[in-house]
Structures are given as structure tokens and as C-alpha cells.
Amino acid sequence: MLLLCSIIVSLSFGGANVPVSKVWSILLHHVPGISQLFDLRSPMEGVGDPDATIIMQVRLPRVVLAVLVGAALALAGAGFQGVLRNPLADPYTLGVATGSSVGAAFIILFGLQTWIGLWTVPAVSFATGLFTLFLVLRLAYYKGRMELETLILSGVVIQAFFGSMVSFMVSLSKSAVNEIVFWIMGSLSMRGWNYTLIVLPYVVVGAIVLISLSRELNLFSLGERQAMHLGVNVQRTKLIVLIVSTLMTAAAVSVSGVIGFVGLVVPHLVRLITGPDNRIVVPVSAIVGGIYVLWSDTIARMALNPKEIPLGVVTAFIGAPFFAYLLWKRKAKGGESRA
Amino acid sequence: MTDTMLEARQLDYRIGDAVILRSIDLRVEKGSFCGIIGPNGSGKSTLLKLLSGIEPPERGEIMLEGRPLDNYGRKEIARRMAVLQQEPLPSLGYTVKEVVEMGRFPYQSWFGGEKDDPGPIIDRVMAELDLQRLSSRIVTELSGGERQRTALAKTLVQQPSVLMLDEPTTFLDIGFQIQMMDYVRKWRQDNGLTVVAVLHDLNLAAQYCDRLIVLHQGRVAAEGTPEEVLTVDLVHRVYGTKPIVLSHPDTGVPQILLKGR
Image 1 (cartoon, chains in turn green, cyan):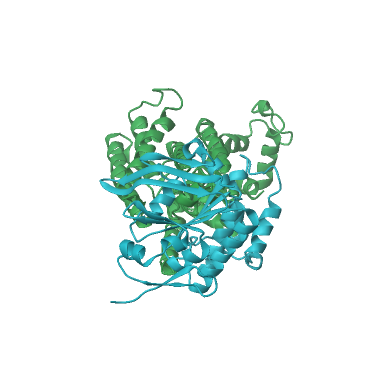
Image 2: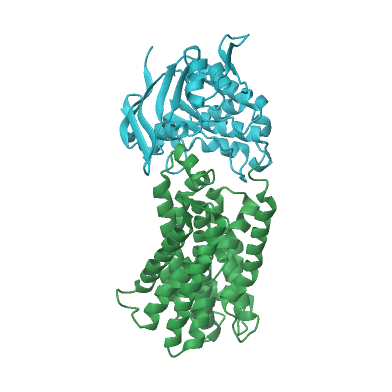
């Protein structure tokens, strides 16, 4: 419900002023039959209504994309946190998002988008994202153990490296400045329906897989060995969750650049309210993630209207202090956990 | 009535070049309370890892109810065997009831449902271990003893035929140690459970186990009833200190007093 309201409200904010009631009427007009998209106007409007075009062709795809990207990142965050048993893990802190953007930037800047069809960009960014994850985990593992801080540090190192690669590649292209900002800070501007359609299947499949593994994720919180004793196939579950989370990250990054901290903040917020049970946390995170990115994007395009702030700036502005808070909270109770 | 629950034949295990276990043979009968004792580094915990299927042995075979352990799926093992670890439950945001319910995982279908209602068994275990009062408390708020009791409840809810204990009393003071072992013993008597326990405390082992297996430098150094095993000679040979061995005034089982040089 909240998601729906947010969508409507967000739709009505924008450079061109369209009242909420009109947004409703335009939307409702389109609900009964999707086929009657543009020839039929709603009865109360005049012919060639520009507002309807703005809503349906500019704002709605952007809003839907924001929701999908948010859901993908939040699900990925919940997945990473669950399976790595690390509250600070998320696509951004693990460097997976930046890693994915290397692949996407490479493909786009060298004009290879249609190399293997429509899915080229997500596929390649998935490959580089997975490679990044592998590197980070490799760097963080020491004698079979993985300290929480080491993991994040490894993420930062790898992320810095790949981030510079993205910047370098973008510098080679003509439209440099804007593109760099896009890849490093994330943005949802000027994305039509076809981008939305690229992300949708990843989010749907990812959500189904993670929800079906949510009981296993609960058992992971007892420790990997205990999960094994309870009958979880630990290695397989871990692999599936890591791959699916990376896949969703890659899909999101390939259309929106690197949007930080969504996967970190959202699952934690949800846990604060619903408790730690992943059977609830995972699906609710998807919804809240959608709302979160939608509002962030609305702020991004409205705050300095008509100029846009990169979306990643907004999410980081909220997310980074939250990250600091989590670190601090962990330090505060660190002494007690071994007692 | 000499059915074998768990059997190991000629187990070898190495980590790198270090031999941890060598030619281990053992047989645990159904319904028995079997203790595995031995000094630090003798391979006790490794043996438990192998027996519970966490690590495969390098050589040798483990049979659970007459069938090779590696023939079982993970969930199949979890329906027959539960393991209580030494480490207390981590600091979790789950309630006691939620943690206990996790023990039903091996019985749940893909959607999380069960054929029969698990409510009665969960209630019974909670009642037996005096956890009802704590049922909706969060794990982080519990004391060490309460946490370990919650962990035990979770393993019992698995309705295992074999319960493995890996030094379950390490982090508990003596009151909770006895309480813990009493709970295990009672559940075993009422439900025909087989218990395999790695124990550090020889006196505790002598009081609760009907058979003891002594590990020393990766081999079985002795095996038998507590009376047969816990002798001055053996303790001296294995632990390198000469104790005084007495009979427990109530039960007659051997008890050990330490003496300095």
C-alpha cells in the first residue's frame, strides 16, 4: 500500500506541474486495457494531452525502474548479509556493485551493447561482479576464517581499484564528465521502458530464489557448522545466494550505475521493525527497498530542480551515517558477545 | 539388544602432514551413553566432526544404523543425528521459541510446512527443559546456561536417534553443568536416545557415561566402562599426571582427585 502511494505521489512531483488528481485519472485510464495506450484519451482531457505523455513515457518508467532497482539492491543486501553473517555486507561495501559497473561501462563505452543481444550488458556486468566477489572473498579469507572488518576492507580496496578503472574508461569517451558521474554515483534519468524490462526478470527470479531459501538463511545465523548439523546444504546454499545476489546487483547496476548503501540500510531498517526472521525480512526488504530508492530518486530530481543530483549522492547521504552507526553499535556490544 | 547405532572402522584423518586420527575403530550401541575423553589435542573434537559427517575421513568408513554415513543426505542425517556444540549460541535477535523451532528444519518441506504438526514435540521439549518461561525472550538477553539450554532444546526438537555433545559444559559453571547433563540423561532414558559426548571433565564423564573411549595421540588408548578405564595407570599414561582415584560415595563410579607434585 505504502509502495503504491509512494508511486503516485512521486509521479506527481516533477519539472512540469501535474496535479495529483490528474495523475490518478491518467493512471486509472490506463489500467483496464494496456492495449489502448495512446490513441484513446481520457474523456475529461483535451486532445494531445502532454501531461499524459510526461506521466506515461517519462515518469512512470523511471518510477517503476526506481522501485525495481531498489528491490534488487535490497534483496541482494539481505542475501549477502544472511549468507556471510556480516551485518555490514551489501553490494556496495563488498565492491560487487563497482565490479559490475566495470563490465557495464566497458561494454557501453565501446559500443558492444548488442554483442550477444539485449542481455549483453547485464550478462557482462554479472561476470565482472562475480569476479569481484570472488576476489574480495579470496582476499578476506584467512585460514578458513573471515573477519568482519577484513571483509569490508577487502571490499573497499577492490572497489577503489575497479572504480578507477571505470573512471579511466569513461575518460576515454567523449561525453566524459556526465558519464563518470553516472557510473560512480548512479542515476535513473532518461531511462525508458526497455531498461525497466531488463531488470524485471532478475528481480522476480531473485526474489523467488531468496524467499525460498529464507529458512536456510535463518539457520546460517546460528553459524555454518550448526546450520550443517540441522540439515542445510551449506556450500550449495551459500553459492546460490551469492550468485543470485550478485546477479541482481549486476542487473541493477547495468541500468542505473552504482547506487550505494541501499542493500545495507534497507534490510537493517526492516529487521528493526520485524525482527530477524528472513522469511519476513527478505520479501519486506524488496518492497521497502523499492520505496527507499523511489523516494531517494524523487529527492534527487526535485531538490535542485531543474538540475538533478546523482541518485547515489542521496542514498549515500542517508546510508553512510547509518553505516557508521552500525559500526559504532557493534563496537559498543563487541565485548559482551564473547562473554 | 546389542544393536549398533554408530560404528567407525579404521578412520584416518590428517590436516596437512599432521596425523590427527589413526585407525580409529569404535562401536556405539543403541541407547548407550558413550563418552569420548582424552587430553587436549588428542583428536576428540575432530573425531566428533567425522562422526557427524561435517568432514569426510581420509580413510575408513562410518556407519549410521548400518548404512554408510556418506549415503545419507544432509537432511536425512539431521533427522537422525543432532549435535550440541561447545560454543554457546551466538548473539541473535531471535526468541528462544524461534531458535527451538529451527530444529524442525530437517522435517520441513520446501515451503516450510510439515506433514504432522510439530507443536506437541516443541512444547514437550520446552517443558522438559524448563524453557517455557523464557519462550519469548530474545537470545541476547539470556545467560550462558540459558543459552546452552536453548541450544539443547533445538537439538532435541530434531528428534534424533543419536545426540552428539561436543564439550557441552565448557562455558558453564558446575550448577549448570550438572543441570545440563541431567537433562540429557533424562531425555535419553525417556526416549531411548543414544548419546555420544566429548567430555573434558573426567568426573562428569564417569558419572553419566556407561562407556568411555579414551583418545590419546589420535588413537584409541582404552575403551570400556568407567571402572575399567579410569585407573591411576591410564590417567598417568594419557594425561601425564598421577591422580588419586576414589569411588563416588553415592554411586560407586570412579572419581578423580588431582594432586600436585
